[in-house]
Image 1 (spheres, rainbow, N blue to C red):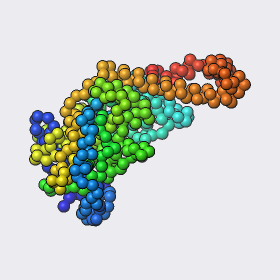
Image 2 (tube, rainbow, N blue to C red):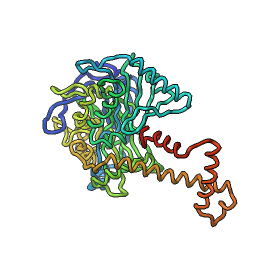
Image 3 (cartoon, rainbow, N blue to C red):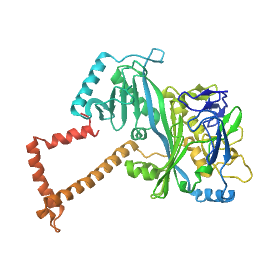
Image 4 (tube, rainbow, N blue to C red):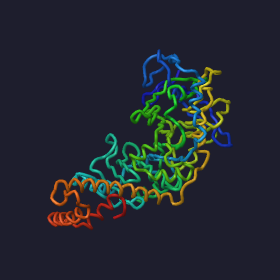
Length: 486
């Protein structure tokens, strides 16, 4: 019949159906054991197959009540699609498991050295006494890491060190891998390519552990940014289709989907958020206002984005279970070694979003796909792919333009954002302080120079009482903020 997913998913068929690799080679690949991971939305549950997260017992599906003609759905779906364009694509998050390595280049389990354990424990004790993170001598890309007074995870990571570019979790190495590295979005986009990012991390780890380490891909997020796509008008319960193959046939089952809104406007969709493979579609322009990653606009402008246009991000997330099952017949089985990941990106994206023009069997494919409803074919998995989704499908088949010295641009935009926020905060504190002080500072005709003169005298007196040195405090914070190394 099948087997259970290791972490508690539904039944999994052992059939492995080959799918074409992206590109001219036509090689075959598949995700073995992913029989019921794909689905169609907008159905009414009656009975259920397997023991998946959404229910128990047998399953069958009945179509939800129909409310609008298919022609109307199609006309609304293609409206405004002539301006849809890809403005960026890449790897947005990367998690790496770190192992010691034997002479054959294979991962092995080994305890940390006693000297390294002592050093880490002394730094952690310092953070505990300081009741917060402290700067340590380890430097990655010009910024010192900070040791936290606590570990990470569920106790498996005894030491946690972070910077704006990477998070480094370290264990004693007795149970599993010795460390895990999480590469931030800022770091990955600032590197010339993914291979450079991985090589730089490995060189940093060599300095810590004193030897070459084996890097295994634990999780990777691939994304495509699309401008001109009116996602708010998409009937996601009907027009998003996920297609799987089980025992040689096509199956349509339920996919966990959540819609998010900002006020009355849709701002995002999540598909199978907790699964081994998931997808998130969200308004990236709105997210930039919150995260401050305004440097994405420089990248978008280079690829035809117009100021004011909404950009939607399609992000597919692959966890360890999914990466382990990826297979290309005669080429590879599973994405393990991090150095093999750059050449597997097209395969991962094609499996997730589908191939442009469909698979070798002539039918549209892909774990998730936006479709144009058809009144001529009642089989939803055969409905044609939406023009906007075709733009998504070809994301990793083309190379969007990249601004020259983009890493430097990212740092400049980040500094500009924080300076602007700092000015806003200082002005807010200044007006509040003036209100509390009163007198001339609260006079309607008072200007900011009067406040600054008063503040210079008050701050100097405060620093004298606290035995503070302004220049030394600025340097300490520049190191803590990663603006300079110690």
